Image (cartoon, rainbow, N blue to C red; front, side):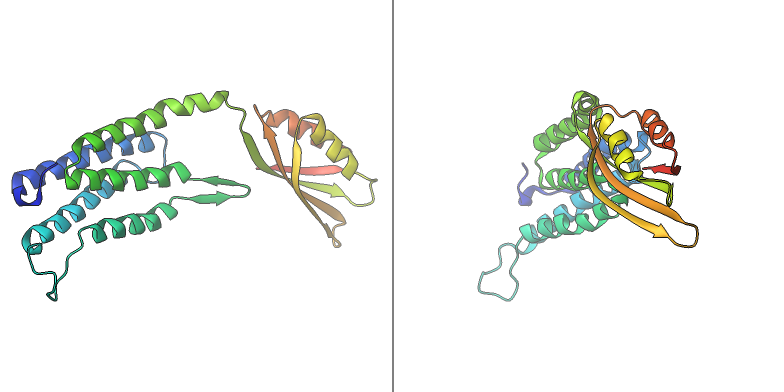
Length: 231
């Protein structure tokens, strides 16, 4: 770690270039998966966080020897705290809620991590920045494959349009879902008086592999069901 008194132009340029490299490595993985915050975004976040920490370090090097009883009082950690808070707004923009599912959480976490890497480089903690970058790439590239073997619960929304007065179709729907190992988390329905259609809405969950075609075919096969939407 370099102390503030040794801050030179060469040191500043080196830190900024290293921050750009590490942030770009994380961003490339997001770019390959077609995420909205990709290579350029992560690179800019890392370089920006690094620059802000360097500026804070420069202020401390210039004015840090002032008397504590004076008007000017410096707290170098304040800039780092504001970076952590500010990056949260950028990360929130990458999160998208689509029905019962939420996308973009990993990208938001990557942006938050990129800011941390930039801050570490800016203060001179190069080994920590390199280690965290390597750890994040390992998580993004290899642990994602391991998730396939985990029996995680997947939440989905099923909307069924049924003919009104065509019999008690709800027990048949529930029986069809239960036969495929699907658990109903939430349920609602409404009736369209103009068309005579009853719309059932289910939020469901199931562990393990999903077979959407079998599920949809089983529901469409019910005589009263006219339309199925699965998301």
